[in-house]
Image (cartoon, rainbow, N blue to C red):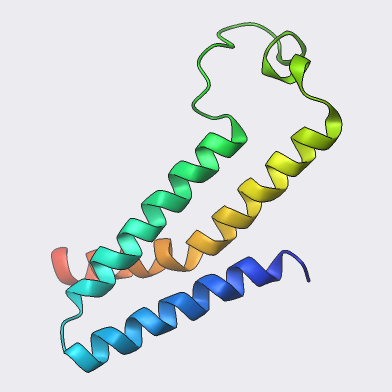
Length: 105
């Protein structure tokens, strides 16, 4: 249940953005705001998971970055990366649908 909260928060924010777009009559704000939220969530997830860490090179994991972190710190980082990604999934889907409908049709 704990991991469902970030996803539902993302859906709630997407709903609010959709209502704002409906009131304003301009759906391009959905693309702009949700696209930014999707990009920020993907970038933040990458940072938290260590995907952009190039200092490890070809060394094994036990000699790289994980050498200086205990298990609790790694678990906490992975948990926050998962939460941020779950928040961004509705925005990634909405942006993808908007791009498909508007730009590819």
